[in-house]
Image 1 (cartoon, helix red, strand yellow):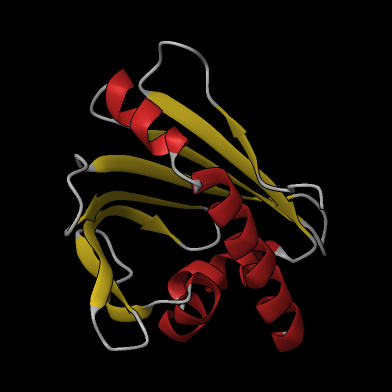
Image 2 (cartoon, rainbow, N blue to C red):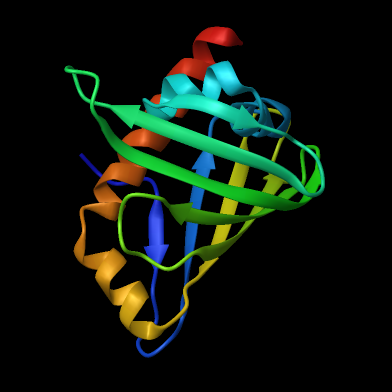
Amino acid sequence: MEKKTKIHAEDDKHDLIITREFDLPVELLFKAYEDPEIVAQWMGTKVLRLENKKYGGWQFETSDASGNVVFKANGVIHDFVPNQKIVRTFEMENINFAPQLEFLEFEKLTDDTSKLTMQIIYKSIKHRATQLKLPFAQGLNMAHNRLEEIITKIK
C-alpha cells in the first residue's frame, strides 16, 4: 500500500518536512488534532491533557495490555490558530531523545480536501537521523490513515 504521508528529509539538516493531503475539509482535519477524544482514537493513546491555547500544555500516554506505560510524551503549545496552525514542542518522557519543535500548518485545498504540513526541528542532525531509523514514517502513515477513517465516519 502506498504511503500517503510523505517525509522529506534533506541530508545534513536538523529538520524534516511531513506532508499529507486528506479527503477531509480543513475544519475536520484540524478537529482531529484538537479534540482529545479523536486524538486518542487515531493515535491509539490516552490523552492526559490537551490545552488548545497559546502556552497550553499537552501530555499523552500509551500502555501495554498489562497496564505498563510504554510511551509518554508531553509538550507546550506555543501558538494555536484554529483551522490554520499549531506550534508545539514534543518530548518523549521515557526515551532518551531531546525535545523537538513542531510547526503544523493546515491548508484548505477545496471544500472537501485539505493538506497538513509539519516541519519538525531536532536538536541535532544526529537526533534526526536516529528518529528516521525508527519505524517513524510507517507509524505516522498508519496513524494518518486511521485519522482519515475516524473523521470520515464523523462526517
